[in-house]
Image (cartoon, rainbow, N blue to C red):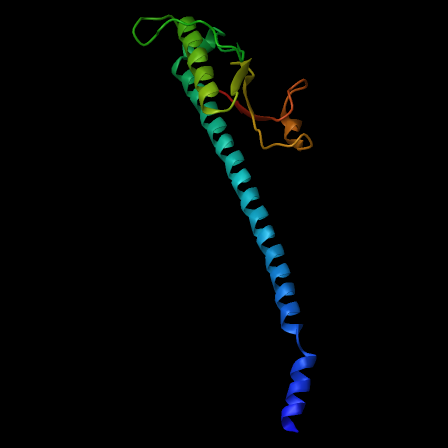
Length: 170
């Protein structure tokens, strides 16, 4: 009789362990999907931080170039540097005036911006009297069209463009 009792009892629980395993697999898979989303989000944030760090260093670069050529700053040669790269003399091998050095700095700086940042561009606007504003812009493919990162960018800036501003006085 005791064999019959165990046999009935074991038959009534058939499939219960399988159901527990399926629920456990479902819970673990949701956890793994959450971890994957967290890793992707972390990688994206790391990429954004990397580009912001480069933009900060490039802002320091043009500020240092301007401090090294104070005569050019006083002459107003850095008052409105556009995002386009001008033709410039080679001031490494030739002797240049302060205005030529400013054009050379402008070309070298924006050339580095375009190499270090995706579609990187930089502008400088201001004067010695009021200070200078440096604007760095680059494209981030990871940005969605609904991201609010464009709120810092001037009007008419293309979507998926991130902007970085800094103010300084040489």
